Length: 385
Image 1 (cartoon, one colour):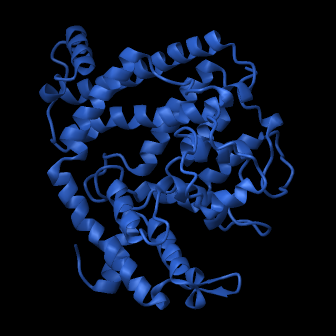
Image 2: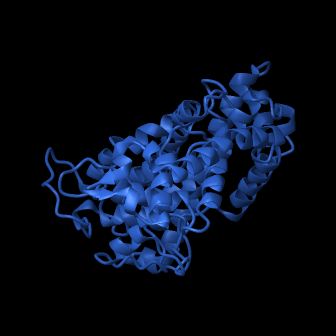
Image 3: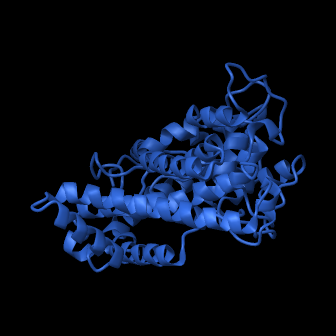
């Protein structure tokens, strides 16, 4: 479709790069670079909701990312927009998450309050533009304009113009990102796929942890209708199979609604180019009013019964002390950091400002998996938490 992003029309990369080979597109190259990055591999041991040793079947940040990618590709294919770019953005959207999920982010944000804070979306950008070290001619992964734009604006226009992080300032010197405008359809699809993924698969994890029961779920209108329909079709169905069927139907419901509603918006507005999408005064990819109401009811249930569950929060708070104590330890004695974090391209961290030291310490801790965080804590403090 003409309003899709086309690899042949990319605005390019920040640095001159090698020529494409094997018939690959620019966005396929971006996707592959993300998959082969160290930050992507570390997602396998990072908390989604439940901490590292809760069990083998709970979602991790990596399995969540893969589910987002699958949903995003399904939507992109039906809307006839660029599947490779959509998948790339879905795979990259959580690269900047620290260990211990949103609690870990909250702790780092507080520790960095005097040094421009911490935000996992900005950290994702920092990873792909600076922290990954794989190429002789540049830092980062040297991704295309469209991928960088999607990472920066996948939640919508970038509205925080009072603080523009240095990584973004650097990109703006080469590319006009038009921060007040909306992102591509591909970025919008990746963003809404994230919501669909966690608001459906978290039912499975919450039931597994016994935070609520199937009967409790039936207070949610859409969930109740689906469960009743499944039980009508399959009498005496086992609970674990029922839950799986519930989740796949919920995912299908939201995917189909997005495709139907977004197609209608595209047709009504007669979009002809990617610029038409960027200049539109609202998201194009969105749920119908009824489906949005259903999603908000699910979100409210999960926040009440899972994300704000005292058992979960207490456990995460207990483990997040490791982040805080390691941060202060490294701040007091930079020599405890690995050599490559203390020295970069001839610059010593010992002579850097307090702000620079704090940012490097945060980069190091934010990149840790839950397991590595625990190992480092035991190494330095000789105790288990």
